[in-house]
Length: 315
Ligand SMILES: Nc1ncnc2c1ncn2[C@@H]1O[C@H](COP(=O)(O)OP(=O)(O)OP(=O)(O)O)[C@@H](O)[C@H]1O
Ligand SMILES: [Mg+2]
Image 1: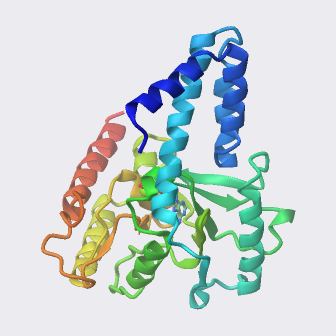
Image 2 (image 1 turned 135 degrees about the vertical axis):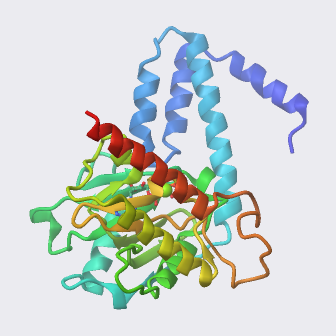
Image 3 (image 1 turned 45 degrees about the vertical axis):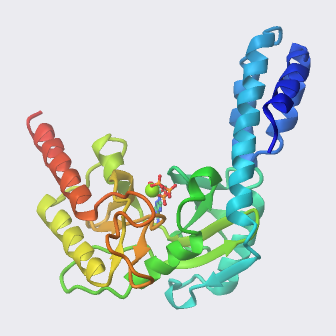
């Protein structure tokens, strides 16, 4: 721990820097962040006038704080991880062999370090992760379109959540749920990779939109969408999960998707979920924090969807 005196001393040294020096120090610091963020950070930096000493200093200090927070989080969360990976071979769709997935995962690992690359396009983004799919076309080299890669980018949020391994394990567990006539499901896990610096996974890509995107009209509501069928299926699925003592706990509008083909509901993102079979759990929503109640969250979403549809009908 540094004493306050040390900090003041540092502050004083920094105060003496010129605008140009702050700019240079910021540039050096930006290089320490994940490549995916560097472009945005750089854009923010160049927007500041080169003579604006105060502005450049504030930018540098904010960046430094962010770096230190992130560094701390990584140290806490990741120092324990050796390299670990697993293929869920039984779930791979036709055309996606383990070898192909392996090749693409390696390529993806390289490419996520290269921000300029647009070979993988964004499917969505959450508080901890960015989800990407490989662009269709020549470069696809047979990688079936139903694969997406979830890559952890905001470690400061991720550190309190499940590891990507735990997340896929829970999804795998949910795959056992089979309810006749019910179309709700979770994306099939294909692969995960973790080491001290990188955590990502590959899973079934859902061609659809989140409830949030539908309500925001960023994605269209599929023709023939039936509100009751959709929400009843999710409810029944959640009840079955709960019977098996699996609780999602983060069922906000960005974590339920609606597949364009057939309007099937898909529950995603098991980053805050818990398997209450493991260890004693009095209240799964209170265990180690405070979480969203699955059923209550779903009810809220249903109400919003109904008023959204009514509003659209009303013109
Ligand atoms: N299997 C998938 N198929 C298609 N799109 C997906 C898939 N998984 C995630 N997405 C998209 O990526 C977004 C972010 O993914 P996810 O919710 O897993 O990340 P997160 O950072 O853990 O989110 P949160 O902010 O809820 O913690 C989703 O809201 C969705 O738009
Ligand atoms: Mg999410």
